[in-house]
Image (tube, rainbow, N blue to C red):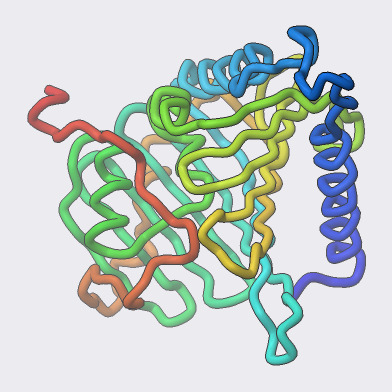
Length: 283
């Protein structure tokens, strides 16, 4: 579990989220006539917010290789009804269009996921269990198959697909620019909030490099309104990656098990990349 210092950081960011969202949603006084002036009227999709989301997408999509660390904190109801906070850490390595590795030490059982363009491998080192399945020839298609067939889901999926903006933008119903922060990710960030695709989200995007540093999400169909935070750090783009990074020799002697979904339901809010083309159409 998180130590007190880590939990303090999460609570601190929750306070930032609450205060900035409240300021962003404050409405100016309505004129005596009861009608808002043209100056007060704002578009549902503020151009600056959408431009920042698009710039972030283009920055990620243009990179041939990506490496970053993802720290997910999420709330789960306790026996008393108050939410507990749990965390998962993932070390992500990606090479477009057909290589992905996700190492998850986790607070629970550790796991490793490898995709090399032909097969997907899930390895549990502590239990010495491995599952292997055939996979389509692109990361997007492989993530979709892993989700639907095997229940494999990563909270950063929307950030590593081939075109994050194309996947997400059509479903956004409301987007607005909040302001700047100098307290997240060790750099100055622009804060954007949006609603769509079943979520309310706030995202901190680096002013200079356009990389995401923190994503705060509440799923709209969750009656408890539990909060999920994704802290993103140690970004490395377009660096050389060893060819054997997307396989593991340690799993050679592991016991093979079916590559199947162990749970009846995916985690809250989990969804695959949208509108993924079939491998035949991509060729």
